[in-house]
Length: 137
Image (tube, rainbow, N blue to C red; front, side):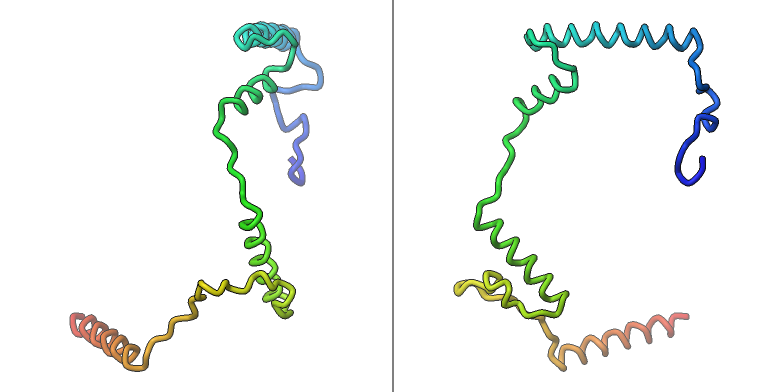
């Protein structure tokens, strides 16, 4: 193998010309495939010869769940949000995405800040915890 590519010589069982046994095995496999395709056609009731993967795919589409869609409004919200993200990354104004503005009924949650008192309580608790750990040593 060189640079991610395989050569024939990297596979010891493969030579440039197949042996007689390999050819016989290939013919046997080909006949089995043809037999299975005809059996599949009789099961599916198809009179037109179609390859097995296409028939299985057609059956899977018919029996599978219905594909869910996205409303135009949902797509517009996603597009506006993506435009706003790109505007933020590029450093341009978000005026290019006016639909990204929050609706009147919804309030955007801002960043939550700790009050100085709450921060002081947390710092004191951490210091007590570390003092306890150091004392235990």
